[in-house]
Amino acid sequence: MSDEHRDHYYLASFQEDHHHVIDETGAYNQKPPSIVLSSTYGSQVFDDPSSYMSFTDYNSLANAFGLSPSSSEVFSIGDLGGGGNNNENPVTPNSSVSFSSSEAGGEEDSGKTKKENPPKVSEDGGQCSKKEGKTKKKGEKRQREPRFAFMTKSEVDHLEDGYRWRKYGQKAVKNSPYPRSYYKCTTQKCTVKKRVERSFQDPSIVITTYEGQHNHPIPVTLRGNTAAMFSHSMFTPAPMETTRPVIFPQDILVQMAPHLSNQAGANSTYPQILNDQHLYDHQYHHQVPEYGLVQDIVPSMFFKQEP
DNA sequence: CGACTTTGACCAGCGC
DNA sequence: GCGCTGGTCAAAGTCG
Image (cartoon, rainbow, N blue to C red; front, side, top):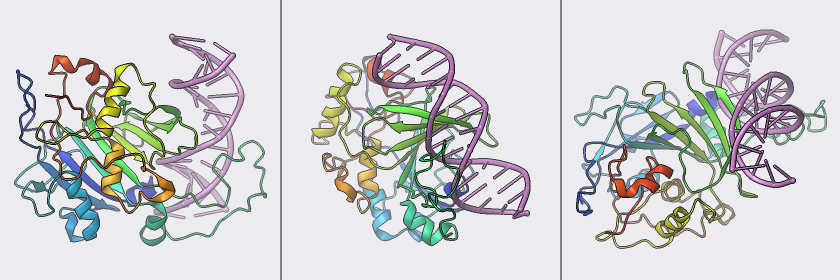
């Protein structure tokens, strides 16, 4: 936790004041969502991420949302979860979706966060009998993967994102009545993890933190046509005039940290479909009946539909 | 029976 | 050094 709080987060929130993306006729409202950018570094909150983020990072973030870094659509907020902000464009606690990211752990840890402790225990040393292999190798400092946190308004804790996850732990969260769940991607050799917890400030908000990057495509066995839909949305980006783009965590990972995504050929199978596209808002609260299945599976993520 | 969840225990890192 | 906390493991339980 202490590590995490020292991490350097990018945060973007989708404002909720432009919900009606799809009208009764199924046509899209072309108005893109406003995007709120802010970031935290350690306990500090930077209302203007560009003030400390590298140009590249900030551009990546802005570009991920089809914005220029100087766009008037970029606002700043003071805190995750709709905390205080003094901006003229206040972020309500109802912000639909947000995400934040942290840099890769190695870089983070060594430079900015904690003192670099040398390995403590020799790996063959202790009584590792039972718990050996539990935490990688003893004495081997845990390396932190790049992480991205989504804040999603949903009554479902574990949001379907197309991948298969296995829950491997759950812990009570300090100062929160809601537990945090830990998931791993079940695909072999994929080390991506995610944590899911509810905001104690707004219990309707689910905070999903992804760590690492998938090195494989989305499994095809996902509940009926959903897989097809996911793969369609992932692999066949259409012109933005006719199709709403879809955003998934992995897309954002690619977009947000392209400099991090060239490890181990990660994401080589994914086109970077968000370039020069706008993100459009998505529906919450199941307002569009024809999206029932999708919303059932992806309650508050982005999805698209052919017009 | 395999896949998945639950849950208590363990470990590492950090602050005091 | 000690205690707290987050993160992880793995056995047991559950489900389809």
